[in-house]
Image 1 (cartoon, rainbow over the protein chains, first blue to last red):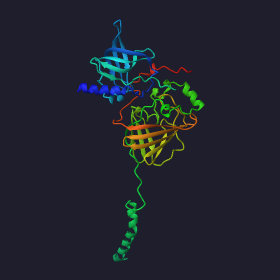
Image 2: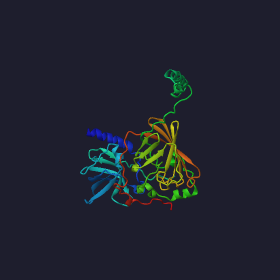
Image 3: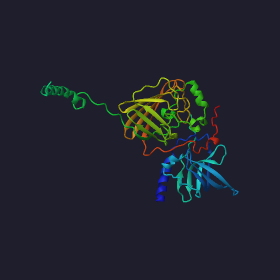
Image 4: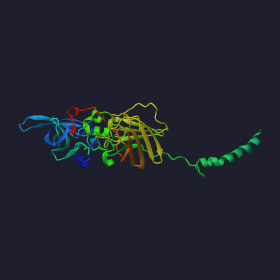
Length: 135
Length: 238
């Protein structure tokens, strides 16, 4: 049952990555698509709330120091329709998160995908929704 | 008058009235009942359209004032960034945040999942009030022409954007929308923007509205808002 659920989620995520969502802000005003980030760590907190879900990872840097990073995703209702629930990502999970870093240098990432240790991958719904060109 | 003399007169009256009664029931020549308008009840969504010039195929016909404003503004100025209302047309094309139509003979309500806002379209034959306040969603009146609901909206304030790219409008904006029901799952939506302060002539875009197999959910922009402190102005054309 669980593997079938994640297969469905993964399929929905694959279809969804190409579709940017309406956010309450544009991508480029907060994130920099020239600064990709890939981090692996342990989930310390999950906020399945509006206007964006957040999860937080404790990540060890090269010196062994632990830094807590925030990862932002789509609004929860959009993810809920793709099969996400409040406990899809939960404290204690070890995941690899990919996305783009905040322009102001904060430990904040607009997250595209997360990958669990068993290889399951989920979209966080942001995709590469960089600013909409005015041309 | 005795009962016996009233009976023939009653029968005569009934016989005279009979053709009219059967005609008005639709059973005979000429007269037919008006068809009920199409049923638009349900949950719907149009494709997310962050730049409304894309379905148009070119930039809208800006006035010099609007062109200068479009060049200077930045996404950080988007009212949605401040969790303000999305506006009547932009709410339709909010993409993965659908809307629900609740339709009665006199009113059609559009309930947006985006920030749980709504439009009321009066279809009872009224005209726009003379002294209108300028509001986020304006005053909408509608009437049916066959399979199409035509909606006229005025009384809008100038604080919403038409899309994420920053096409804006003034409080003179006049919207005319055509919701044409194609079949049970499809509506063809054509919206015309008329605003002499921002655009030299009216312009229109058409988007498909599709029925969604979902329910309207909660959305509260301020519930856990953490982005505003991180936003940076991106415009480099100043």
